[in-house]
Amino acid sequence: MYKAKILYVEDELFLAKIVKESLESRGYDVLLEMDGGEAVQQFIALTPDICVLDIMLPNKDGFTIAEEIRQINTAIPIIFLTAKTQTADLVKGFNLGGNDYIRKPFSMEELIVRIENALRNRESNNTADTPKNEINIGSFAFNPHRQTLSDSGDERKLSFRESELLRLLYENRERIIDRRDILNVLWGSDSFFNSRTLDVYITKLRGYLKNDPALQIITVKGIGYRFVLE
Image 1 (cartoon, rainbow, N blue to C red):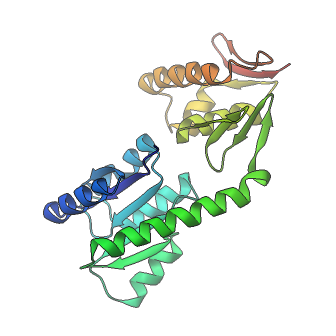
Image 2 (image 1 turned 60 degrees about the vertical axis):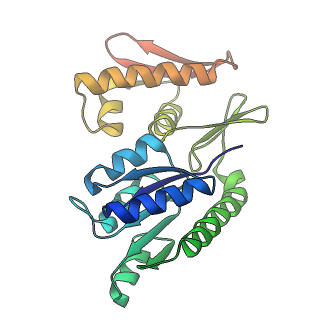
């Protein structure tokens, strides 16, 4: 049975442990991050189904984290937790793309109900939006909005960078796309480490697409890649 993944960012250790354990007891898969500065990287690595963000955090506040997450994924539900009570803070949270806002102290039942509601709303929105967001790539249906790749009824959840790499290759299909351009667009740097990481992602995408021999990601040595649909 699939466990919904929650990215939970909270720096109050005692509260964080209680909330994490309570959510896990309800069947959720919870990644706890206590440093605001690491939250977005954890989001990219985990590809969660929902984010629960405290606002007052070390190194980067919850509002900034939400703003950066929204640049990566416009659909994922975000719930803010805060001790602030001013209306201006609530308005700011919603303007930055927050879906819900819970004031501290809160009960676990309230948090769980709000998480469940946000996930249900997301699922209904995804169901309604799927046809207009899907891209047919050979025998596959690719939905960059949901970050999914489907073939004959089997759906694979892609990570953010897997989805963005596939989108970039598809949008530039039938022509060579420079390796450095890919690195700078997706990683912001063409460093050696990022270059090796790109090699891994290319190999993974080739594996995902192998069921359709008409699709190829061709390496153009010393230059980049060409995405071919025969």
